[in-house]
Image (cartoon, rainbow, N blue to C red; front, side):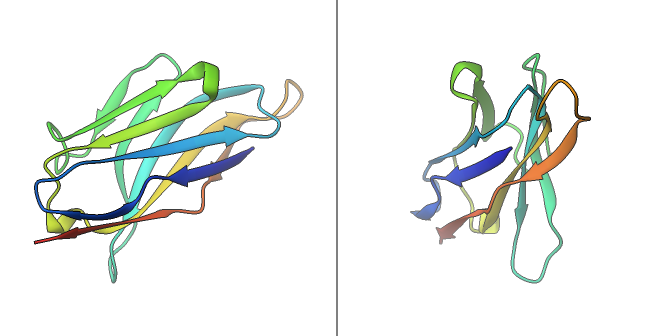
Length: 120
């Protein structure tokens, strides 16, 4: 399973961005996808998750501003980020709990990250 995160960039505070996480390769089932972020000098933190049944969870810091969604037909998960703040500046990563084939166990896979910079 390969994950490609995209959509990052530079935006002013109060603006919006939409990140995409596209999965490719051998995919039997994706159980859940999570978005994480890591700001300079800080630990990676969980931002939002979405299960295959479309159950979502959000970090308190992004509730009401970020929305995670999925297009199962395209094996793509999106993170719509509105009302962005300078403290949202970080490299954003997607992570998938996925099963590559019927015969393998589920494992966690990471994308390469996309940089989001929010200017004040």
